[in-house]
Amino acid sequence: MFFALSGWLITSLLLEEVAKDGSANLGAFYIRRVTRIAPMYYVTMVLYIILSLAQLIVKKDGENWHQMLNALPWIATFNSEYRTVGAGDIFGHAWTLGVEEKFYVIWPIIFVVFRAKTVSAFILSCAVAFFLTYLAGFDPGPIRGYLGLGFGAALAILAAQRHAVISLLRRPVVAVVSVVCIAGFHAASIVHPATAWHVLTSFSTAFLVACLWYCDSSWVARGLSWAPMAFVGRLTFGIYLLHVLVMNVLLKGGMAKFGQSLDWPIAFIVVYGASIPVAYAFYRVVERPCINFGRRLALTRFARAEGAGSPG
Image (cartoon, rainbow, N blue to C red; front, side):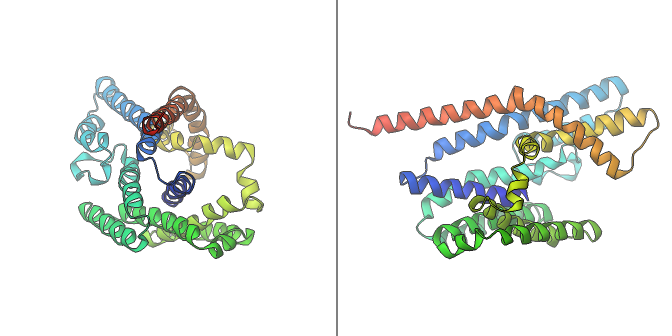
């Protein structure tokens, strides 16, 4: 779902900037992306390093520490999807941000250079995605990642070029159908795991996000605008990064120490519930200040560029 959301959001923002200003300021774009993602990502990486080292010193268990040392070059460079088997699976979910970051770096350049040549942009994007998945040994993760990003980006471009598409997306029923499809495909992925279900979920998510973008009158949009949902929504990046650490501390550390275990539905509720306040603390201390700094820096850079280009 996040891949499709990113594909739609980044492309739509680029399209809006071009429509408003005649071009996209890639420098400002990259500043906002770096300050949005890198600080929380690297803070999480440091937490993994500290906890792995603490486990080595306190418990004399060096497995995670050795995994961290082997995985660090991949993790630190946003290339976790290419890590070797010897690097283990510590901070394993970082692979998704490896895929995301390559999209953030490469796609805006293709968009700016080929924005008047949709077919050329499509062919080049497919070639780049194929090459990146080839480097990953055609692992299912990057495949569904780039497909999901592609669904979101393609639908954003299609909507910008075809008013009939926007008219379709403004129908509340499309959002409802998208939610039903997402729930069905996700359930199928649990019962019969397969990459195809994830791809179909991304495809449906692209339509859901687009509907929410153009139509805020559906019950889906109203539900997602509910204050508690919006609050958790602001924390999702931190929850995503930190939830495995929270899970390990609570389930593998605290409860296992007392010989206790939880069934997975209860474990899910406990871990997710505990991840919210942890993510909120990091949101206030790290994430939000860095986002605001990035926005100010991007605005300053844009203003200076405008001033340098003006005759006065």
